[in-house]
Amino acid sequence: MERPVVSVVIPAYNSAGTIRQAIESARMQETDLEIIVIDDCSKDGLAEIMEAYRGCPVISYVRNKQNLGAAMSRNRGVELARGTYVAFLDADDWWAPGKLKKQLALMEKGEYALCCTARELVTPQGELTGRIIPVKERISYRDLLKHNSINCSSVLAKREVLLEFPMEHEEVHEDYLTWMKILKKYGSACGVNEPLLKYRLTSAGKSGSKWKSARMTFGTYRCMGFGLLKSSACFFSYALHGVLKYGGLK
Image 1 (cartoon, helix red, strand yellow):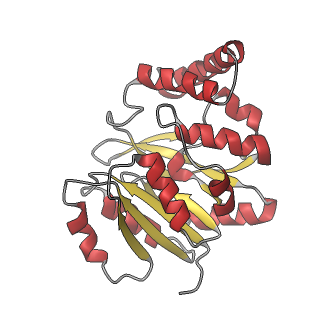
Image 2: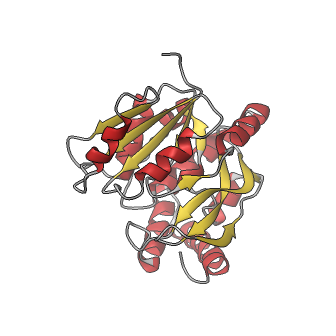
């Protein structure tokens, strides 16, 4: 097979009810791509759902031998990827048509290492809420220190950069940590300020508890090597943005 432009990495754990929508939203993108589903030892019949895609040349289904977590599963997907770029998509989210095409146009024009998009919040049942979380068209490292405006399921990044900065420290927000490391070295990220990601709200996962998420965010700054004073200043800005964005800490 020819090398795809984009490798879509979908970490999945007990996602039988949502995985089809995620996969189909990736398949409809007007981009030469491959889709890599990393099954992190699901117990809900995800393997049976994936049987429907057996033989599809653009879809690879990989099952972890042991539960690795979302971060390590994404890293494994990046290692397996053949594309020049990698796009992350969680198994309970989905994309609007044209998402990757618009991001690629920006990435190739400005030679950025990373691109993200705005997102529309979706109920746990999959209903659109109309609530949009915007992004700046240019996101600096300084911007990112104030709050994490980059949602993982919206990210398109160069594979070589993600190999350089794999996700780690799952006890904190490993994706936020990765974006900060990338922008610290490579400069600004670009953003498409359109809700091309449909982001499902859920109480499950590491960010389900707002206070737990807050503690993890402070820990993320500490993992960046920041002292207590700088970590506290960044956290104050994060908390303020959380109130403005969600009406409470997030």
